[in-house]
Length: 610
Image (cartoon, rainbow, N blue to C red; front, side, top):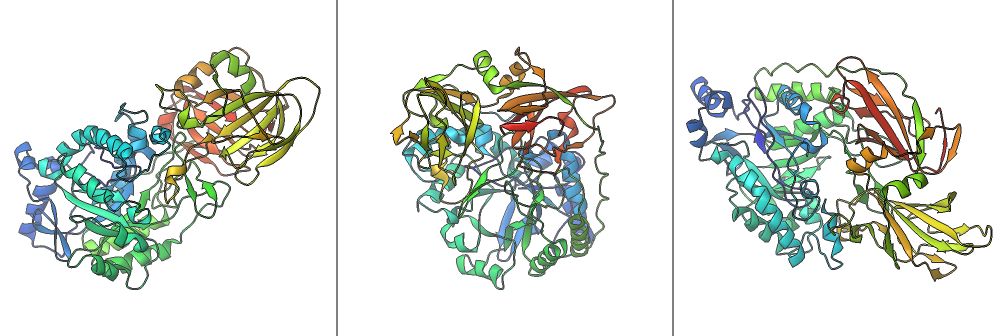
């Protein structure tokens, strides 16, 4: 966690644990104390927390940090109430971090919280990346892996990650002159809770590497008693305030301040479903009720942003549902960072509670309409394979994570194409071994689709002689919550049968869609004018000319089916089936003069001009 304030933000520090983890409070301070303090005291507080006025000696002189004293928080020994908002730096272009934080201050918030995603900072084992905006699929190479437990293979990976991560985090702690005032040990572990020794292990892993700030946990009501660890403040997550819910915290920890760590201002959207909307008046009334109890609160999310790349994730309750690229979340700010009615209602509420005028809201980012983009060229996936990709040969199907790629750490995201030779048609059955969606082709002819619900189809006999059976398998997102974390292997996770005989002798092509691949794709020979009608997976490209400074815009892909969109080699939009909703495309993704716009469509049938 970080207190907000001052003029300009520093580079965000990174602290994280596991798959979704720790909380950081942003940097400088905007006064939000309980109750109203005297003018001399207030001036002292402002001097203490306004980083623009502090000398280096003053910064290093802070020793108390965030503490708890019975029912309240103390910061530097004085009452402090956390009014927080969540924004994930990896879901927002770096160029917009300051704008979003200034909007937090204008809403009356004094604290920013963020997850720090292990899967983005250590995509390959032992290779750490804390640059730019910133995947743990390699953990799943171990068939015995038990995530979020004290299983040796997991704790060794956590220890290596923490060794690197804490070297960044520890100097940024509040008591060392930095912005971090609290660190969350784990996130909603009570809903998982497979190992009673795990939380104590994580806590000590933090302490042994130099974490000295307040430790916290967060869980929903049902998980509270299972996610506790001695020495960490328990907080609660919810959207609907049930009677007595906050008092329930007293049953798990007495004489401690109450904190709603995740008050869900909206929710994420599932592929193929409607956009989730949470009524603004209901939300603000619930926030007001929470504040009346004297509790601290964090708005999850204040600003959601975008799941760039293949980072959309999924949820599995009764059935598997992948999330969409947009992380708009119906939050206080839109995916594009614009104000909503929730913002102004919350601003009015927090201003009343604080009893002080708030900073004026910053102007919103300008938008531009660039008109239609003609995707004038295409190239079939089948033409790309021999030019760019070398297959892996295997007698058996190999799941994505266990492919011998990327220094033997496997493939984390994207597609995998499995090819094998067949000599006839018949009944194809997956026995539920497809993760998550497979398009089936005989040579280049589209046959059908397989997924969790469709596990069999008929392969036509065709002409005699050998034919290529092709299964193009898409990883649609890994489940990020609940008990299915250890089952997130993708691709073909077992045998596929033709007429009850398991298929063998595969050529396996990795289609990870890395930037280097997308860049090299531009120079492959074989690009052609887009026909009026086309069947099969393909890449399409067009060019957008921008004469002036780029501005935020939106991509509307009406008429297209499933696919992905890249802007200058950055995957900006995932296209759900039959969508008419526009995807946000921020100005930092657009270069001036011209921008290459590309798209792959995994849908086998497309009419150009749509």
